[in-house]
Length: 209
Image (tube, rainbow, N blue to C red):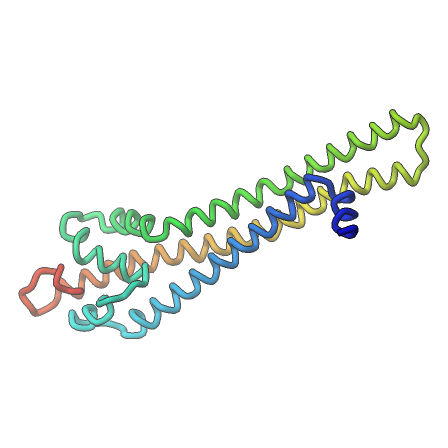
């Protein structure tokens, strides 16, 4: 307990807020990365590796799949591809609907990367206010008191930047991966529609999956 109190005295309220924000950012980043990894792994296994060239293969790949990328292709073939010529817009809508929680997670990561330096600056300002308050109260404080106060003020800035930089890296890495998913969804939706259109069966495309 004494150790925790000592750490709190060194970093202050802004430092505690930064620690909480850092833990939240790491949790959201890892959760999003793991989710996207398994989504891609499942899509590759259930759809890409089958290299479908006919309607029967598309049926097999789509049937009972809970993968969100395959669900987008399924909905394009079933519903959206029949009443709209703008497949990209339909895929964008379905992509947002199926990956809304990922979009929110990325927004939180971006917010944390932007907020951390500001919290660090707030801690520095509060620390400097405390230093000048000490000078005002004691009249002629010794150098050790001033050095300790200034160190306490600046440590939160270091903490804020140490959180913001990796969070920004995580954000752009996950964003690029997320955009690649959207491209894959568009490409394979067009491909699935072409397979349905070229099928020798005289069945509507909604039967494909």
